Image 1: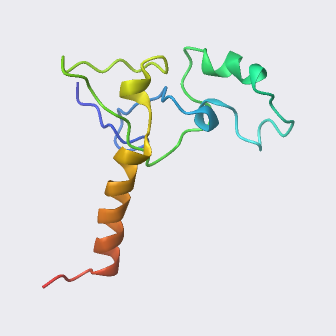
Image 2 (image 1 turned 90 degrees about the horizontal axis):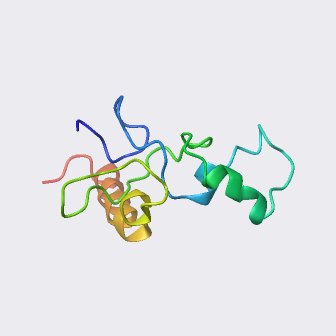
Length: 101
């Protein structure tokens, strides 16, 4: 598919991740509060996320090697902490140790 599973990396990456803050418009574009049920119109939309979570890693393809860019497939499209935390930890190590021995 030539798809990066990191939001914002390369020209082809997930546009519809399962993340409430990312699927809602930014506070700059929509300064009024959005109640829980009011957010459903954005979350259930097939449009790309309005507030991309750049740098987030999604779950990626399933055992069938298929990835559908759809918020409904949360197992594949959600940027979970157990996926992102180890990646951030490794990057933090390399930033702190730019010339490992």
